[in-house]
Image (cartoon, rainbow, N blue to C red; front, side, top):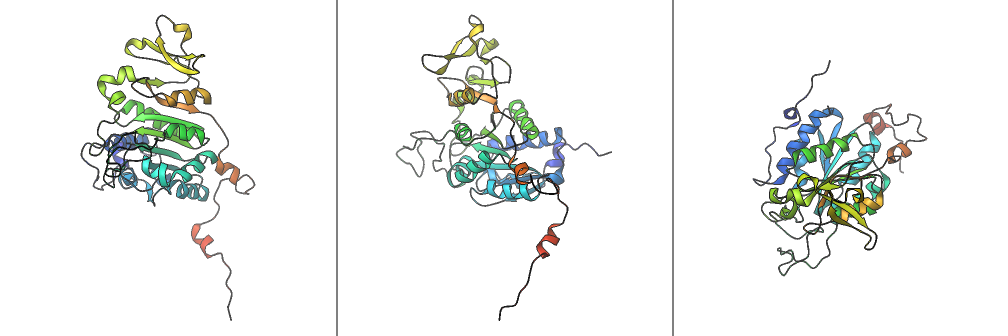
Length: 331
């Protein structure tokens, strides 16, 4: 009988090198706890990352890991999944790594539905290279690369994933242990490309950028935790709800106690509702957290191995495959 592992068993002896107070610490702690809770096999679990603060993640988890090159983590992870489809592969990236140089690779991993668990840490800044504005930075963000304020229209990671054909899209906040933990457990259970945007606080270069909804004093009125089959309500005592306004073709906040029959019920299989939820921004509207969109579909690796005699099962060794080659003499 195997011994139940604890969060400490998934923690390496490596010195964690993030700035004190960085939101990555909270994500790491929640991740190791979830791995223990779901009974993840360390020998079959792999973390793949690109470049950036978030990409140090593989060093700090006691599993297999690859610290790859800028933006290419989804490509490396795809190759790994095809080589050994039995592996449980997590991709850790950031808003800069994943949505700038890596945007193309991320798009194709999502549209192909490769069984990768993709965690995008979004702090709306380039932290590792000292605070330049990133693809998700808001208009007017002042940084070393935009001293007068950024005039680039920011990318919405969730809408990007939806437009790329992702079948699983979720959101969470770095320090929200129950919320983030629940999302990570759902990701672990999902068979296909799962995309999670994690709002992560960069305490040095973009501190409190999400304060308008992540701050404790704003959380009740600015966060809506969506659950499949349940009403879209929030606020103190769930007094507020979301309604679809036909005139504006958008969501609006209503009094849930007086107009309960008009409150929408979350349907995670509805792509149109997912788009509306992912488009909401604080402080005008609450920010949607949890599993926003989830549908089942055939995975890329299953299709890849469809006509393969082993059907997703390895029958040989890598060492043998490397030695199976032809030689010839050039005269």
